[in-house]
Length: 627
Image (tube, rainbow, N blue to C red; front, side):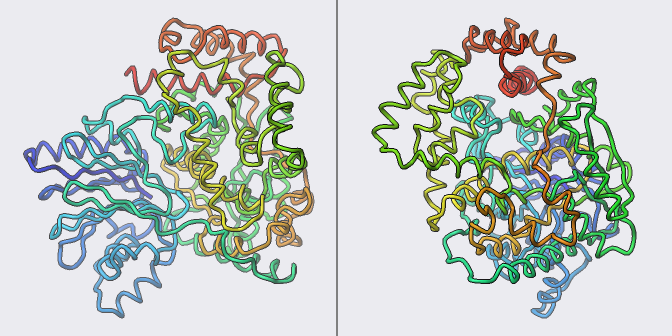
């Protein structure tokens, strides 16, 4: 696991020593991603660099790595789990290897297959290959977006890329002008979706896509996508159960390849417990497991984690998150680069920090909810689908005006508005933190004018994504939508940044693309059966994971933010959101923010998530814009 950085210079080249010094600064700003060593090359127009966290081929895996001719150089972030089989195939085709690393396998695959090399890779990755002979840069990102990749083509014609946004900012040619549509998307969802970047001049390479840069032009192309268009496979429930058990076990097994200590996150939920179960079956030693908890009982899942640890006889470690640790938030803001409001980042960071004292690699259970319909909001959407039987004109002309006429905070106001919407808009509204009703009160006139009609652009993209699902099933549409948005932009961003912040590699077996391609062919009513979430996954884990875990009520990786905001964080959040410095940014109506603070303090309404989103945004401004 590593971090990569680089730039391709335009016609007029800086002196080599200047470019080398710049590349060195870009690499060192992400030392946390790879504390073991740094590798760089500055040659012709290309400057490629990386920071390495050594996992495989500790002795000879240093980067950049070249092909036999010396014309191709690669810097790589990630792990390729099928590299040994791929290496044998390439050797049979005449390729000769100098190392035992998965990195070298990629550069030879590119030499053999060109841009199609990505289709041969099973793993998580973001890499850049420069062809010195043809002056072409090839950049690729893994299928689901486990590893990040930011890029920009500057006004001077220089192409800049890196694993984190701060790498590009170090280059010096990236404007800090905000993309207000990205800001609107952040306030809506609590994260900046893949289609946006908070800075106008920067882009994210989409999951399942690659990029070619040549002669000053950028061309991107998708090579893989979640596919719900093909017909479902007709199998019995028992056949699906057997197939899933076999494929999940294999996905876990290939991720146990490591030359350094390895363990697992264990929340006590279905997904992480299933991963630990498979690891315990495969490993001949006790699995090292790591859990996080809170003193607040409502949010504490430790009893289930302990149950799983005892059942699988793991070497178990626990940590309690207390409010005084929230001071760590400032550090987290720096690691995320963009505004990010998922408060579960805090326990993710703390459990990663604890695990790093014992291991260098962990397996996690992320992705199961998007794959098997695990979120309770899917069941909620199914319950509310009956409103679609009401004529649209009735919903639009009766329910919606009635909702808008009710005063702020009136009981039923949000429900009536949500019920007035069409199916996808209803779901988008349900997952929005600041929906359209709240934005009317929150956004300043200046922000509304400067958006120039851009408000809601993220919602338009979400509608387009949902409409592109070939299979006519509401659940499949929502699974696809979340897999393209919430999964890479929130869940995987959180896991990548928080584990890499402490130089820990996280592997995600449930997002193995071969497993995904199987699960997509399972009928949706076996994932969400009635109102029961993850039906077929739970059936597959029966007899392997304790029933007390499989069939307990879903809790989620929550954080007692509401209590903390009214206690230990009260003065800090109130102070920052009320400061003149904050108000002068001109984005929001101070009256509405004061209302949120007042109602939350007096326990009239729970505005914890709204206040957390606004607080994270202001902390981000102070760290990345003001600084």
